Amino acid sequence: MAKQQTSKDAAAEKSLAAGLHTVLKPFRDIDNWDVEHNPGDDVSHFPQARLDSLIERGLVQGEVETEVSSDNLD
Image (cartoon, rainbow, N blue to C red; front, side):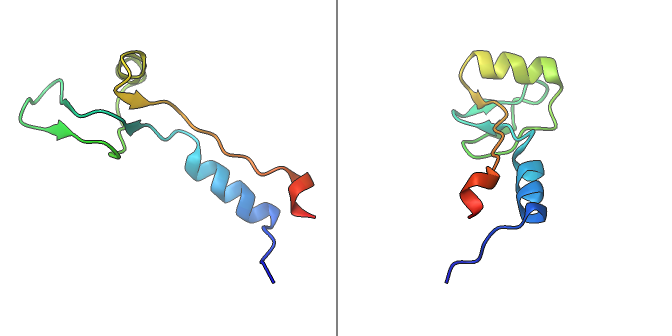
């Protein structure tokens, strides 16, 4: 039988997913051209203005929020 997800598990899952910014296409670091950011890398630590610019250019995937509806837990 499948384990049902509790509200505590759902809250933890949502908090992990919120704020994640992952690289879609490789690009070089703005301050150090020797550093390359590759697809799948987490760049959530970048300043918001930098993240907005990268998202606009399609280099980074923006915030993804996953939320489990209580209707699906029955």
